[in-house]
Amino acid sequence: MKCMKLGDSIKRVSEKEVSSLLRQGYNYCSKSEWKEKVRVFVPKKETETVKSAEKKKGKQNPKGKAKKSY
Image (cartoon, rainbow, N blue to C red):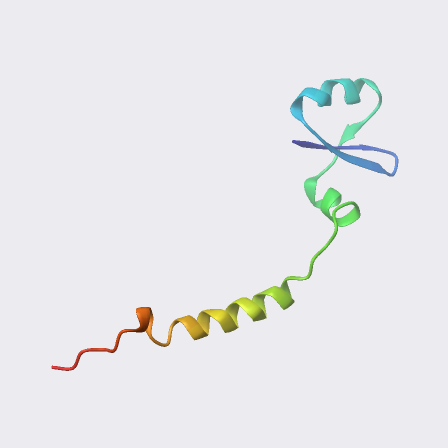
């Protein structure tokens, strides 16, 4: 997959389509530029806090077994 740009239009295309788009006037652009302008951004802070809370619950007693004392 490559990111191609023509003016303000940015596309993510397969390797097969690159040569035809280059002939049409498109240029390569960075993936980070595509991410900023085209892709929908989902904030990670909300998902990280939920996952960290779930991890803490799971570490209390692995497999529900009590620890042995000798």
